Structure formats: C-alpha cells, structure tokens
Image (tube, rainbow over all chains, first blue to last red; front, side, top):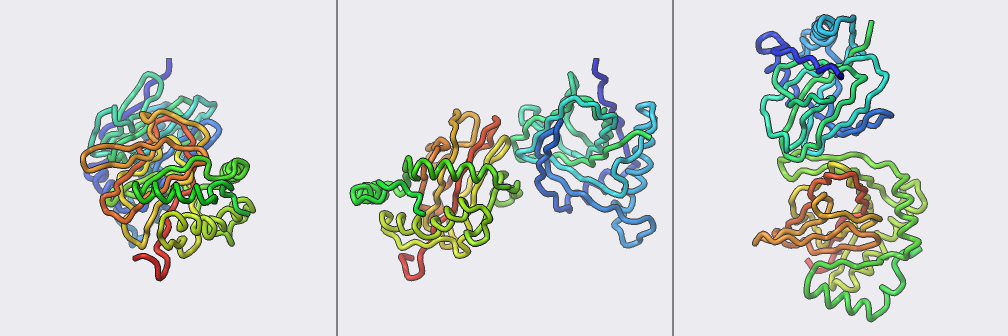
Length: 177
Length: 209
C-alpha cells in the first residue's frame, strides 16, 4: 500500500502565504519542459537565488524565504516523515505554476528524497479541468497555505490543465541527511 | 533547389488555384512539395531543437514548440535551403495565383512549429502588421480525430466551425486582411506530433495596399 502524501495546513505564520503569493505573481515564470528518465511534463517556473542573510534591500517576502526553505520546511518534513531531510538545492527558491497546457507524469523510482510543495493556490476548480494531482489512489487539488510532502520514489501525476486557471506553488526538493 | 511539386507550376494548375482563391480566399493544397523534399524536411525538423513558448491570456494565449531561423543563420543545410526557397520561390509562386504582390517577412526568418500534448493556440486573428496571407505547410504524418484537439479551426460569427485536419505535405493558406478571420488550434489532449512550417506573407512594397 502506497502511503498517502502528508498535508500540513496551515503551513506558514499568519500572512506569509499572502506575501509569497504576491511576490510570485510578479515573477517572470517561463514555460518549462520536464524531461528525465522517470518524469515528463510541462509547467511554468522561475528559479530565484535567495537573498543573502542580512541583505536589507531584499523584499520582505523573499528575505524570509531562505530560513523557510532551508530550516523551517526541512524541520517540518523531518518530523512528519521520521527521518532527517535537508534542502537539495540550498540558496534557490523555485516558484512553479500550473497554467493551461501544464501536465506531469513521474514513474516510480529508487529516489529516496522527498518533494515538498508549498501550495499558494487561492482558488479551486473542478477536477474535470485538470491540474489536479494524483499519487497512487490519492488525488488532491493544490490549495492555499498548505505543505504537501511526497516521497520522490512514488509515482505522481498532474492531469492536463485545459482551462485558463493557475495554481502556484514553491517546489522544494529535499534529500536525506 | 525548388522543392515545389513540379506540376503546381503548370499554367492549368495556376489557373485553377487562381479561380479557387478568388472565390474563397482560403484553400488547402495537397502534395505541395515533392514527396522526397517533404520527407527530408520532416527529418531535419525532428532533429532540430525547438523552444517551448507561451503567452499569457491577456491577448491570446498559446503554448507550443517553436524554431525560428533565417536561411543564412541556419546550420542545417536542408532547413537552410528550404528557408531560402520560402523567402523567394514560394512567395513568387503564391503571388502568381493570389493576384497580390507579396513579400516574405522582412527578416526572412522561417518558423517551424510542433504541437504536442497540451499545446494550443487560442482564438485570434492575424490582422495587421502588413500581413496579407497566413500559411501553414503541414508536415504531420499521422491523423487523429478532432476531439483530441490540434486541428486548425476557422470560426464564423454565426458559430460555424470549419476544421482542417493536420496534414502531410499540405499547404493551408488564407487571407488575414479582415478582422473577423478568427481561428484557433484547440488544446491537444492526446500525445500527438503536429508539425508545420507557418507564417505570413506581406504586402510587397508598392504592391496592393
């Protein structure tokens, strides 16, 4: 039996999701084709170099990202999954969006990491429009201020999004140790 | 090298095209290139890298794979030769039966497109920018039902839809001088390979405005 994804909700201190969503709306997300031996898909994406600690010029939302991605979320994930996890890409904040035409399919693999999704999607739509996630028997729509933890070895799919709606999230790969 | 199927330059073919164009201002020509040329072109395009491009829905949205190059800058000899013809012999041939003095894109760039799973082109017209005709040179070897998307659709104000299945070695060409010439390619909901070379022909300097 495949374990269900962990969902932690609300994930962030009051107001932080709203600040991150506002920052994400200003980013120049670009279409991105995912092509790897175990995964394929299309999403929109913008990778940011996180502001250095103490950089007073950085927007508040982005300045708060480094401790969030490198300390808070790995600690939450480690506690929830019972093993020590750390960021796979320290110093990088990866904002993703599902827009019309987005889809994803990942096969089962030997990957021992965890994919954390910090969901910043404020509006819901019918599953028939696509853009919903499925891992084994578990299906869900991206939501608001929710952290989803997915074992990277498990298959994951996002159904083809066929309407002009948008789901935004931070994609946070975590590795053991 | 001129890849146009030789018969299409014959006077009787030119006359037939002239008649259909004058009546409909939109047509499809089957077998537009010499078969070996179409096959070579498809092979070269399958090897050439394409970029995934999109636009937000504030004007009209799209998502597809695209490769744009000028003949001089194209490293592939097949594509370079074909692009050079698109900017000269092709334009002359279309001008000969459309009754218009036409010109290629000023930069001579030629665009190849690939629509795969999830790709689409929302409803729009091609009006303005000096464009006279739009063309789609179909290089799609397989066919599929319209319900899977990926067909070129012309929309009429009365709600009628004219569909053109993606073609192999076909040329779809249509007038874009009216603002009501709306068309689209619905999202592809199956894994398909819709390939084409597409673009516009422009009013030649000193030609019909």
